[in-house]
Length: 180
Image (cartoon, rainbow, N blue to C red; front, top):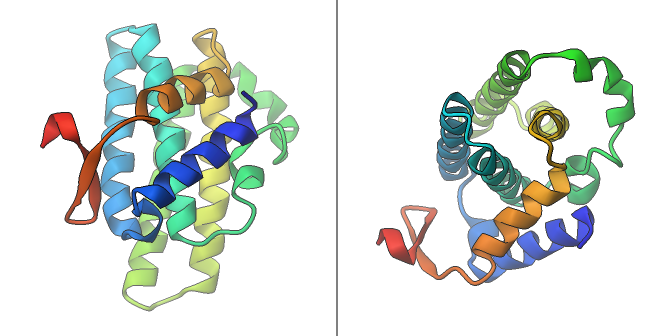
């Protein structure tokens, strides 16, 4: 499957589970959870879990983009379509430096969600979230490459894991059946 087909599948799955209408604030909890799992897998040098966590993070970013009603989600998240070629120098960065940049972008998303939820700003905050999602996807592409995966392979692993997943919404967060 292509990256964009996988993104569309995730969007459809999210809509079917009504995640697309859930709170972006709750989705940030999932982003932080997946981000933590990616860091943990990296420390343990568990390549397969790194790839799975990268894919899971892309799933969460896709759903967050839906919840924010961002335009052109595949264009935002697909590094092959959103200007990653301008980031050629990133290939020389270590995984640790890439992770620092991802952490910074997650912080920018959090700050923008604070602004939106407290009505301080809406337009610029949404644009910042879209830019940060794009940047995280680009950085994740480079992380995947360092572990000998493509971002598409990572997303496909995550898709194959969630496509038949059952569960329910609990306080605005989808909880898989096994965790209920």
